[in-house]
Image 1 (spheres, rainbow, N blue to C red):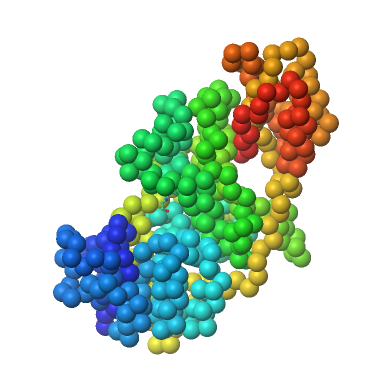
Image 2 (cartoon, helix red, strand yellow):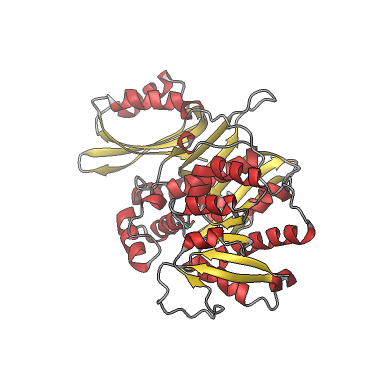
Length: 432
Ligand code: HSE
């Protein structure tokens, strides 16, 4: 018996998925039982190198989502609409769904999974986070015995590529971004990547799997990498750090009665000795800490046709395996969504972390003393304070704090900003 696949989209990932499905030799035998039955595209007349079965192409995507022949709808068109509506239509028509769409899953998860549970179908999304890295299945299944404490990811390849090049070339953000756009490593509109929104969608998904509740995207604090300069990267290097865009989900002192998470995306100083510090270029990595497993890190390609298609096809295979072994599929306790509540996310003021801050000040006597006093006034203890350079008539002072409450740090910063001797606060970054 063959399982019939309806593919929505034949772009980079769609074509990569079709390529695997069309060449099953040497892969798992279950692949021999998967058949591409229909493929939805925008333009049928485009020349394609794929040897697709005859007459499978159509521009009518809804016809695929509702086709009684199709067992599994694979949504690879991306974006919010019509992807969301097509997924819901497929579910309403009793089809299992595989998607790589992090934006739809993170924003419309409740609507989609409630519909899927009511209809008794699966919605699988391994490719939505970390491309080819099997992090979804790892959190859903392999780490089920653990109490997860932290998930920290470098889960946006574009920003990691830009930061890595800034680090190796000493170049500024704008120059590297422009070059990355020319080379096709960054989108013409780079906002989703460089402003951290793509990483926020992804950490929302990872946090909901790690901590067992739904996550509201608007609860996630999100900062991108536009503020990171070559000077910051240079200071980081001298102080023993690299700068990475991290997506962090942490259990901060949850009790059996009250869960409290911190979920955030921001550039961070990462100690050079930390396992995430050596994740460079377009690579992604996810570090999970749990009890009893301790630290576990998954590393690999976070995007691209082959890696992402590898994740898509593994989801298709999981569904096919269930369809093969159960006459009436019942919600698989590890593969279906059983979240009932929204997780409580702590405000950023409650976060305890270290900070790096770079100030441009007038070069007058007592400035360092005034900075130290302002920090002391708000219980912010400093690990180091250095003045290294003079820019025109301004002095550059760099501060690294001990662990402090973010709310206290911000109050100190407000006091410092109002000081006459402070010209500007060039950068503030958190330290891992
Ligand atoms: N735009 C994403 C990134 C790839 O740069 O990692 C797709 O998730």
